[in-house]
Length: 371
Image (cartoon, rainbow, N blue to C red; front, side):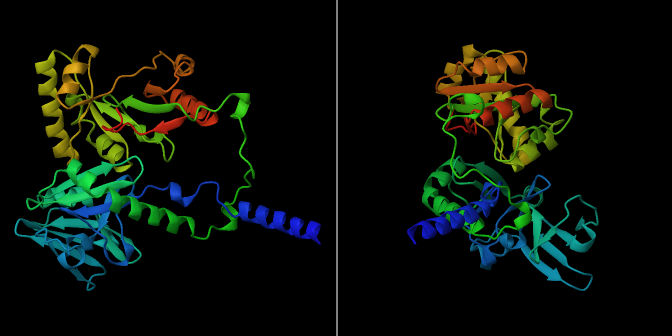
């Protein structure tokens, strides 16, 4: 009887293992929302989403009865011509005809800002709408609590950094609840892949696991002529570096990188005064392009001490090489932290990502607090 019970228990455990998807929905990005100086839990559990690399928020963000904050923007919804959403303020008006994917302003100018429907709720592109109505839009990724989308007007009193510190507990609780709810969702059997019931004690190829070695990835996107975010698998977040002079031409790359949760930093050179001037100009452009500012900088080694003392987080690679083979060879020498400068080449990046996964390095996002 005991033998039969044990057999049944093993069978049940195997069925349970097969019910776990290879790519868990919990690996999808989590976007939380704040309006001015308060976290915002909108009705029906609506949250910001990423659509085509652009962050969208439900229109109820602009409803003071839903968000609890009056941003000075109001709305109206009509079904006369299909679903039509209007957002308006003293400064202007936007009309979204959702079925036609159109958006026009108060003067009838067409704007490439289509709204979308999710579970019957209209969502609008956050950064574009905020910029139109003079609101501030912040994209604030964290290492372990998802990404906070914060929308503010002049009534907000806390800076982004101090606000993040004040809502750590709320974000952690909300993030964990979302992850748990996603993991409890049923998964179609067709998406199931058998997985080992026990984890191997060594990485593939017989090499020791590098789980204790933290790896940070950066890529110079200043001269990119394609979408570099496509080089990174889901869940891997890198640092996208730009020279201030390249930002205008690479504005789409900046917005897509931020929308997918990557960090953005600035590349500067020259003496300290020149570097500080470049950083100020770079942040002015970032504010215009994506409503964000950065404190991450890649600068000559001679400037890092001075910039660090001024509050900048300096990126300095300690893994170098002219090709993938050299990069991987140097990475083997890292005992605690590897900061890797990647070249914008799909083959090279794919080789490195494959090696990092096989050896189970711990890949961390390059945040200001991590550098």
